[in-house]
Structure formats: C-alpha cells, structure tokens
Length: 415
Image 1: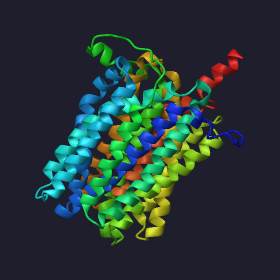
Image 2 (image 1 turned 120 degrees about the vertical axis):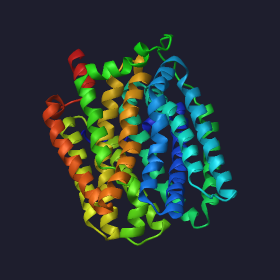
Image 3 (image 1 turned 60 degrees about the horizontal axis):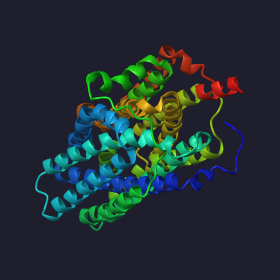
C-alpha cells in the first residue's frame, strides 16, 4: 500500500459525489434494517431455516432475469434518473411490508412477493450505481471515491442491523416505518445529484447488445478471474443468511444479538475501506485479493467451530475485512478497464456475479443447512471457499502475479 495521506477524504469536496454518497448511505441503512426485520419475522413465523434461504431466492430470481436488460438501460439512459426510480421502488416495498405487518401477517408468501419486487428494483439499481461513480469525480480521485463509497455502504450495514434489531423490540412495524422515512429522504437527495454527461450508444435492444458486457468480460481474463473468484468464494461461504438461526439455536440469543452479528462483517469491511482511503493499494494487488478471500474462508470455518458470541463476532469481523479487500480490487479493475459506453452492461455482468454470490449463496446455505445441519453447512462453506481460492490461483496466474493495477502501469508508461 502507498504511504499514509491526510487527504483521504478530500474527494468529499465534490458536491454531487457527496449527495450520491448520502443518498446511498440512507437507502442502504434502510435496506439493512429491513433485512433484519424480515429475517426474524419469517423465522419466527415458520421456524424453518429453508425459508431463510427462500428470502435470498425471492430477491435473486427476478434480479437474474432483469440484470442484463438493466445494464443496457444504464448505458442508454441517465443513470441518476434510474437510481432515483429504483430507490422509489424500494420505498414502495417498505410501505407494502409496513401494511402487511400492520394488517396482521398470517403467511410468509406475501413477504416473498414484495422481495421479488425489491429484487427487480435492485437489478436496475446495481449497474447504474456501479457505472455512475466514475462520472461523479475526476479520474485521479476515483480510487478514494471507491474506498469512501464502500466505507459508507458498510457503515450503513453496521448501523442498520443494530438499529433494526433494537427497533424490532418495539415490533416490526417500528422498523418498517423508519425504513420508509429513510428511503424517502434518499429519493430527495438523489434527485439533487448532477452527473457529467455519460457516453451513450443509442442501440436497439437485442441479444447482441445485451450480451456485449458478457463478451467484454470474457475477453479480459484479469476481469473475468477477479469477478468469478468473488462469485464462487462467497457463493459457498455465504453465512449471513443463517445468522438468525445461528443466533437463536447456537448462541441462544435474541434479535439484539442478531443485529450485532449482522453488523460485524460490515464493521470489518468499513474499517478496511477507510484504511484503503488513506493507504491506497498500489503494489502486489493480486496477492492482496487472494489473501482477502482466503481470510474470508478461514473466518467462516472459525464461525462454524464456535458457540461463543465474542469469537463469532471476531470471525465475522475478519470475514468483512477479507471480503472488502477483494471488492476494492475488483471494482477498480472493472471500472478502469471498461469503456464508459458499455460500463453499464459490464457492471450488469459484475452485478450478476455479486447477486449470485449473495442471494443465491443465501439459498445454497439454506439448503445445505437443511441437509447437513447449521454447523456443518458453515464448515463446508468455509472449506469450499479455500478450495476455490487455491484453484483460481492456478486458473488465473496473471492475477496471482499482478503487482500493479493495469491502468497504473499504462500511466507510468505514458509518463
């Protein structure tokens, strides 16, 4: 990493980036609070860990169907308007969850239906959100913007579950009412963002244009290796979905402890991303990426081996730190290596990998826990992550030996 710099937060002088950051912070805070309420509400109603996996599947299924068209939309239309509409759709989902709970929830399938709508909004939100960031700041500030954007996201993931768990003590209605208020504020802030003109291609939607991002990723082994590593590592190591059952059945704790458990990975990620804003990663980036994924896998194994809350919190903290290193490197690689005119479609492909590793990983964890038991599912997931790390080091040796980011090498050669 580079030497410490006191100007890690100077990127905040850019008004539109700061507004975007605030809107994203509030919307993420709301979504994280909502996820704690949904997980606890569903598990309390059914007592079935398989239903915790269905929470992820309900969001991922529409996401998978819509994500490639969403990337095409992000390249054809104003990304700020897309983000504003998607947050407004999340606001509608919060209102529906409030009304369902207020009317007396008798079955969980209406919750899954709302989550399907939420997954549809997220499908259009993720490519636009990833692609817009580089248009909000000068090129030389992009690395800091990535780090601060990630840290704000994880600060929300830290505070959100904790607030969600505490508010849930007053009932799920209190959680959903707060979610609605936060998302409304986020919509207003996003409407105030002004974005530099983006490169667009007014191509008609077709399979050729929809798949252009996939073809680009396939032609770039460095990008393909980085995003597929995250896919398979987190797919097998997705312990987050099992935390409601883990808190209840292994730690014998309640919603407030669940909130702390959900907070711990984000705390590790937030601390790491803040460190990256001051000590930007510039050397041995390939080894840093693989090391981060290995730490994630080892920490998942530790989580499965312990029934002590403090050890579990430390393991989850390390999981978040390791994952953040991988996310940071992948995001810089993808955005700098991609032309702006297809950045939405390439971001859509990246979002498919992220979504599969998260929501589909939650579904996989629910199935594995149902088959082998909760603890065995965690141990198997962590071991599989370590196997994937070693295999990807052999399949993508250019990542293992990568010392600097490709764009940094080009800048040095140009100078």
